[in-house]
Length: 173
Image 1: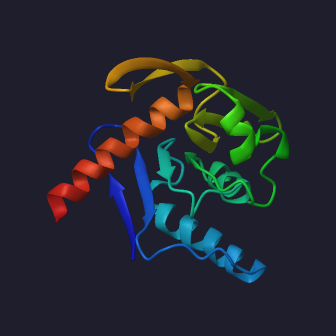
Image 2: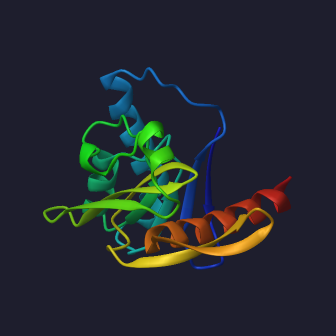
């Protein structure tokens, strides 16, 4: 099942896969996936809106195509996606050695796209054409105490967009 939610919070749209993940997509299916995302976003082409996506849909090639259509995007990304830079990836072992809030970023100037890796207990990989390389903070509960943790601004923006989707899902169910 695929859903599109144009949230009233101004954070943009969100695309989510509720049917589960398919790790073994072949190249033809990746093309189908790009076509699916473009089809779902067609009503907002040339609007300059931001679409938040989960890791099933996020890939550099999808974001490049959306940008051509005047739509910005951000989303968590699977580290094994084609074209996702190795230089920003944290392995689980590497993340265990890092402290929470450590991050790596890479910018593709041609596509105006930022790829990032961030340690939040586990590694988080994110791709964005909507945000730059600005650093921010998020609040995390550690040992029952709330603490500010360094993060890319894109993580904070992604989390805000996700909260709007979670509220929408609650209202629908």
